[in-house]
Amino acid sequence: MLKGKTIILGISGGIAAYKAATICSRLVGLGAEVHVIMTESATRFITPLTLQTLSKNRVHLDTFEELEPQVVTHIDLADRADLILLAPATANMIAKLAHGIADDMLSTTLLAATCPLVIAPAMNVHMYEHPAVTHNMELLAQRGAYFIDPGTGQLACGYVAKGRLAEPDDIVLAIQQWLTKPQPLRGKKVLVTAGGTIERLDPVRYFTNDSSGKMGFAIAEAARDMGAEVSVVAGRTSVNPPQGVSLIRVESAEDMLQAVLSKFDDSDIVIKSAAVADYRPKQTYDQKLKKGSSDQLVLELEKTPDILATLGQRKQNQVLVGFAAETEQVETYALDKLRRKNCDFLVANDVSQEGAGFNYDTNVITIYNKAGLVEQLPLMSKRAAAERLLQIVVNAQQG
Image (cartoon, helix red, strand yellow):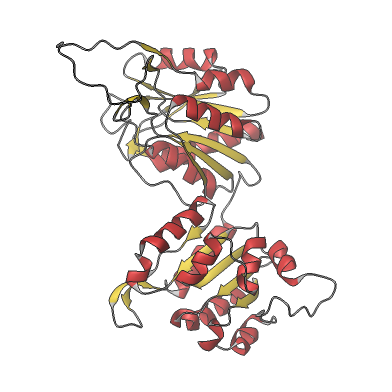
């Protein structure tokens, strides 16, 4: 099932390195061409000869061991790879990659690669949960790396806890699913906005809304899994962003506008699911606004920039998808918004319905285009709704 796929298996120096033999054997058995790169520490746990025998390819250890004069080996391998699997990934190797250190064959090849990177960590539980390691993994996830979480069980140090390398068959299954699933958005750049914006009154107070970012993140995750290169501009959210996407954090509507415009011209599909504040305080204060003697405080608000309308005016070949959270006359307001703001699709949801709208894991959405109703979806998970929305966009592009 992996015939024609080239996979680099990077092995770093942990006790779980012995499991890499099984991973290599399974991948080769599925038809993949596997090239193994080992760190010097990894060779203390398992011999290069073992991996060479299983992979039927020379195992790479030294950046300067150039046996083929016509190519630079680490660049050639990086260019040829359909996917790189780092298993096991030690805390040290994760740190190197996160901070751009290239001091051996494996780390140098990783920095040269543009293909998907899948990381399977393995280490002591306290190391895995250390803030530095957590931060490094978050950095890599933001840059597009995928992680296969370690399992819980007996560790070499004696602890029974999370940190052991995921089982080889589970790792191979994840790789297999990644490389063989349909990816109708491969080669496309998708820009998604998520969450709510914050409009500051003073250093400790601001106006916002109930948006959690769940719908936007579900769309980003689904687009990623359909093969797209995904960028997310996110405001205030209450859930973690998906791995494997480029994340830009913003605060205000103006911040979000500028971030979106910086990515817009290079995007193929733009889905603006963020809940952007319509108004902001006309006057903001550098210091905390103190309570006065009056029982009332009167604030003057002004409109924030209309991001969707701006994109509708600027769009050329992009597919522009807007969102509308409504509580009444959903179709009327949705179609009006779609036409006024020059969207290709408008996703409307009645947030007064149970299970729909902010903070839920589910949603009830209705999708419109310029001809009217496209599809009304029943109550379903936000991820399932995101997948259906993206499939409708893909179908429209195809024909």
